[in-house]
Image 1: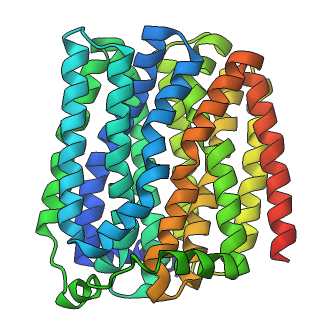
Image 2 (image 1 turned 60 degrees about the horizontal axis):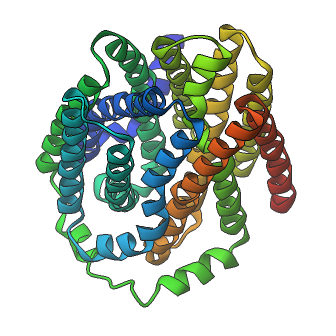
Length: 406
């Protein structure tokens, strides 16, 4: 009987994999996202090695994310007008080219900080289109809307599995052969997701839904989202977390080197432990049988992540820093995933594209400003004091959200 329950629980947790299209996507992402995280770590380490500046770490993060803030509304319109799978394949090809360019410049030794900033802007432009496509693509892979939340959670699981493995691999690759090989590995990894997308079988019914023109309805989407209080306050909390907390990884090279006295391997451990916390959080979310008490879970995630920031800010020991990063990422994962599920559950189907565009703006559009803020504060008052401030703000935001939801 216990074995039967365990098997049933596992089957329930991974139920979205019953859909062929989603299985293909899941498999391709499992490889591609490892490469992406290898590049993310290598990028941060390369910038800090070349410049030694926490401020420039923030500038590079800003350069990558500001196109998301500016271009997401346009991307939402394009995604609703064009073939989504075709857009998806194009963005993966463009990601591949960007990674190969980074690899070439680094391996030949001609890389400069302006190259990195420019290619980060290019990466952000591609991401604006790619992220919007992803959020609009779920219903093409999941036939039953009741499994949408599980699919979102499982996607977070594969994302954070890669976030666990990728940084650890990056640390060793950087130490052994340098950052250039990391970028090369990332470029190669996109082949897997391109193959998966090309192998999907999409229904004609879904294709017909894409004919709707939402250009004139974008303002209506804003009015709709702001008029439904759970969506409004969820988007506001998500924007706060994305602005003040989500960019925290940009300062990990500073903590690894200056606070903990380590190097690339230490950085890999920190970012990898962050991935582990998010992975466990995603599995926890996927195991939920029903979409209930979502606001409570969002509050809990914000509260514990804020406490994690406070502890991390005063830690001088690697083991305590790893635990703190785990808690931070677990909490942020709960916020991001449950906010997504809550919004996707409430929103009307005919408003989904426009509201999810606002969701992407809140989730990713605020990050560039947070990168600049954290980088600038770290240079002025130190990285530990910056994280202390972040922790306090996140805790206060959690209680404000709870009060508005009651």
